[in-house]
Image 1: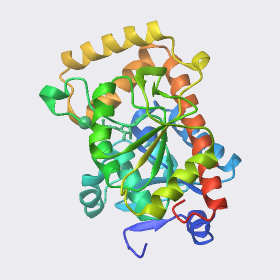
Image 2: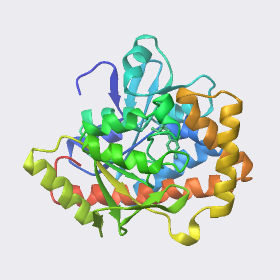
Image 3: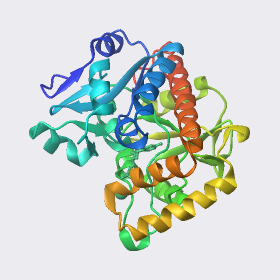
Length: 310
Ligand code: PSU
Ligand code: MN
């Protein structure tokens, strides 16, 4: 990209030029989704996991108004530790750039920037979606609308269980976002292995995901994203009873404290991390690392077949 406001990290630029595998990573998870000081350690572990699987990590964020694809360690440290880092969705990017802000990109913003930079695979924890009171509040994550028009494969453990999962799946269908289970036909519920919904499609290997991406590129028909839903093994999920208790309590507090808008997701995640005494954090980290590993293997498979989209 010949854009003054977007800088590719050297390693990422080299890898893209040489058609080597690259995996995009988001920074909202680091700045707003995980508690300090674990967030920085985990951010580095995610990158290392991508490297171990043979791909180059490209963590995306904004530093002093400049969008960076492939934050270096000093920049990653800054977004993980400095106060006042904005949570940036797609619509915020230009304003944040023009005002010189530090910002962390959501799934929506990370997807859009990654695709524009020529990166075809992205790993996150859980996608944003339709919030439980959306019928009244209209609170639906911009992640959904952005994926409708962004050609990228997002590896995630479904959508966060704090959301209305059924409504989110319906919206993904309406918006034309493809959803495939990785070795499952059940949609995962982030902390929980199974959110209680069937999927139409399942894929068995990174190579098969690369086949899907190649077919999509070859058809030139489907402009949108592909969700690769990668569930936790059942013995690694958060205890469902603890999960349900914590969620009920978190939703009640949300209402009591009058939290709305973009603060909802960070608020509920923080509640989980404190109310489960770190149990949800361990599960959350495990989810992200597993997704980073799978995304890297998909990027490697796609690069092997010479697929320029990855
Ligand atoms: N999943 C996580 N932790 C997070 C998020 C997702 O495990 O912090 C973030 C992602 O950046 C996602 C955002 O895009 O939450 C959704 O926020 P909202 O509901 O405000 O769109
Ligand atoms: Mn929202």
